Length: 256
Image 1 (spheres, one colour):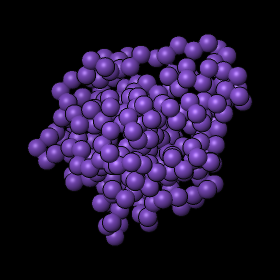
Image 2: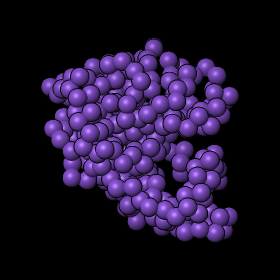
Image 3: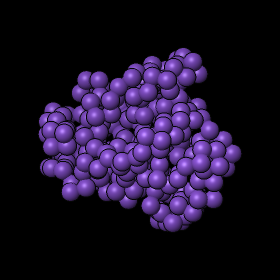
């Protein structure tokens, strides 16, 4: 387990003008539009891939937490189980509750998960870790709430990769700049503070990365793909949930 903060953490907050911040908030409320058309087909790959990697989901019963569930899109792909979705936006959670009444949705903080130690068989997070300025704190919390032998399933955009950047310029950049007359790449830079490579490296500091899948072309490179899915576990010789909670609190104090 990591013994201290990487020099990259916490990431600085990107400064936006008042106008840009207002447009960014509108974009965040259009989450469902990201799952339509070509962009939607690319996005769906990450959700499908993490479920295919899951070993916990193959069990007769399991307890699963999704961090950053948004409006609940990932629950279109899950198997039966005891599912909990967590997000910071009550507006997104209201939509999720209407769509998936069988799932328990909670408003909460990824840096301070409101659950007991060793509570979940798996934690899922798709297209979230690239947003987290204090990612190590979140990973410490995930380790704390996972049961021994539990798994973390992560879906990431290939942020920082050549093909992903080109695809963004040809699709979402054109669409959103026509609609909002704003520099879309500046807004993305403010929201996606972590590259795919940075997130994968940090995962490897906290977990054993058992499996990775690069999509759609399978070649293990962020530069020719759009999405990476990873399955991670906790090495048996690494610290307890209490160790992780202590480190997470220390990281929080240092980033305050």
